[in-house]
View 1 (cartoon, rainbow, N blue to C red):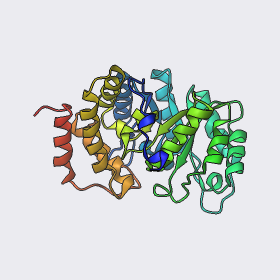
View 2: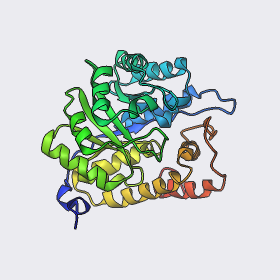
View 3: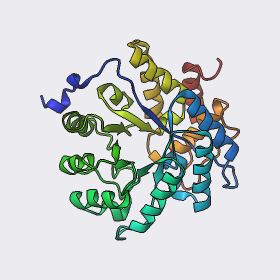
View 4: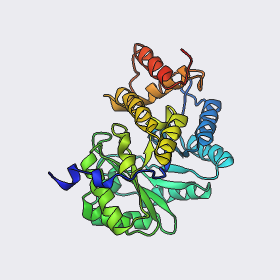
Amino acid sequence: MNKDSDAVDLIQPRRKIVGMSAVYLPFFADGSIDWHGFSAHLQRTIDAGLIPAVNMDTGSVQFLEAKDRVRVLEITSDICDRFVAGACVVDVQNDSLNVSAYQERISEIADARGTPVVFPSWGLNGLDGEAWVGALRQITSGIDFVGFELGAQFVPYGRIYDLAAYRELMMLPNCLGAKHSSLDRLQEWERIRLRNDVRPEFQVFTGNDLAIDMVIYGSDYLLGLSSFAPEIFAKRDACWLAGDDAFYGLNDLLQYLGQFVFRAPVPSYKHSAAQFLKICGTLSNDQCPPGIAPRPASDLLILEDIARRLELISS
């Protein structure tokens, strides 16, 4: 058996899990942002003990105007001591790397006292491994950041680099960790093993919403799924730290939710988030965010059942 397909040796019982939750950004029917709903859900995430991740895909960052992106940072900075935020540059195929745009986004986040998560783009992910790491070194100079590997199944400019490039990324002293979103356990296990051997303090943040148990092997997480139920994720994490077997039942039910809402078309999970958060009483409406296909109303019965089983609503 391949060593990476038998990862039992990686399991770390009673490990403290670091959870970063990509905070959902809600909208009204006219396309305007529900700022009250966002602030309330951000506070819910903080109260649960998770680290907010704003201006991520769950926050529709690629669709936001500059003023709204900045307002998200301002609101978050006002009520939160620690957060990460997506540094997203929107470009098109065959564009070269826009260094100045990345530097502006990264400085914007750092000035708000957040830690940038450097999003992929056509210009950045069109580079080979060595140039990719060099570009990250250049655009983040002097600022701590989180890297981001994103598979092509999510966006056409997504790319998962080889382990040689990942090792060089780990060697950047200001790179605190990297979100890994290949949806492939084997590739993530390879990164955990490399991290354990080369730089133990480096954090591998799983972005695998279809395998949220990666945390037992040594990954931390930066997930969109955790925005559906931040306090339940926090409870699950606390169970793992305490050695409480209730971890497994909570993880299984959360994974059932993940498998359902992250089905194709995957970006529509954001509408599922709106539906679920309204069911739980966190949001006043379940408007589908701009730029994605809506989920059918028939999903509501399944989401309601999951919310009851998670004890987020009464029977």
